[in-house]
Length: 517
Image (cartoon, rainbow, N blue to C red):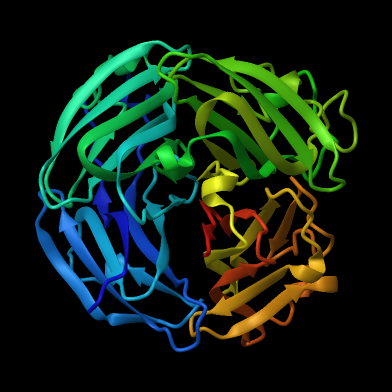
């Protein structure tokens, strides 16, 4: 088979990540539970008849090729398929990585379901991250934690056929260098570095709170980070030099409560928010402080709701949290309110543009606070991530008979210089067989996309559309039953970026849209 496209993904199948002995009480480091992964793949060809034949090679942590799935996964143009790792003949407790290849261009996300989570009320949490189309010799992890009831893990994949030596350098939020850890990874295998384990990091975990890491190697790498709270989990793919920019975009941002009647501006961290967001930005310069401006734009009316200026030390990171402030005062974000910007009534959603005089990388954590769910996505640049077309591999609209079980949202942002009129914008939902279920365009859409503006479509509540806009989606026994993806297209020269939310009745995850040609 002629292989034109490869995707590297990290896989954990029914593998309990072990606890370790450490200085802090064990209950201060939340357990992630048992992890099981699905790979959701989309054929990004738009040409009729160009069916993708996908091969998946599974490597264990020692670099052994344990299983090759070849010939059983074919995907029609623009369609998606879920490859459930639990259905592969790998065995319970298997842990490792995978290399996907195809004779057509493909994109993939990894969806992580965690069960038996001690801190989650029903034992479930969720995460998702983007697979990597190519490796890099330097990886950035802008958002890492290791304090009471929250901890991060970094997993690095060697995407080459020889052993890799890796060097992981850590920094705290104050810009202090915490040391460098050296390790080796067999060919095509992976290594997990747990920030709660003194053997995995070059510092005392008991003294770490939050920060960032830079991983370099003799080989090309892919990677992902998972952060575990007591009742939630979030994942994001490792960032590379291709993700760096002096202008970054966050297409999806929130500071929102359904019921604001009990909101107390003097205790903004004491309420259960419906949704809030946190930016974690890393300065990639080794010597220069970054001077940064973050501009928050409202989705509802397109106004600039808030402008925040700050600095980030070299190689360090900064956190901006719309609920509790992060590294800043919670009141700094009171401007993010439609109803009352003076008291910060949390009823705002929109997007953020981050500008800096030094190259940055960053991620955004989305938190469903009342539901105890979270997800992470990478901040993007117009140059490397923007495109006139986009692919979104995982979209759902499902009720199995006991109420809403799974649904999804697309958040679309115009990072180009010109307005994209709704007459020229097409958002096409495609099922697993490649059939177009519904296309939203023209008057189906709520407004034009001005420069810097964003639009949201939600398969359950409509987002910026009416909920009824999705009533014609497939049903079974009268109940919603759709699994598929999205293809977005705009005129040549347009520059779109996007983020997708996958929401369950008891958990959620977030991932980046993939640019088209």
